[in-house]
Image 1 (cartoon, rainbow, N blue to C red):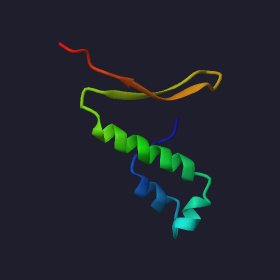
Image 2 (spheres, rainbow, N blue to C red):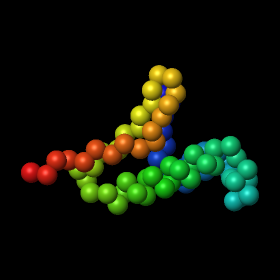
Image 3 (cartoon, rainbow, N blue to C red):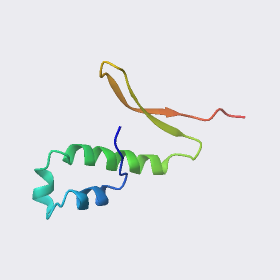
Length: 72
């Protein structure tokens, strides 16, 4: 699996998007928006929460699996 950039602004800079309309026309725009939303939600969750991505060998996937720390 390739590298991941978690900052959508950095992604847009790497895509050399000159303006909003060019960004919307890029094939990566949907993934960028999804990453932006997920990153912002993760920043609001309590620290013991871990997030994972799950994909089976035949391609079925779950974008978000959250693991909560047990209460002690």
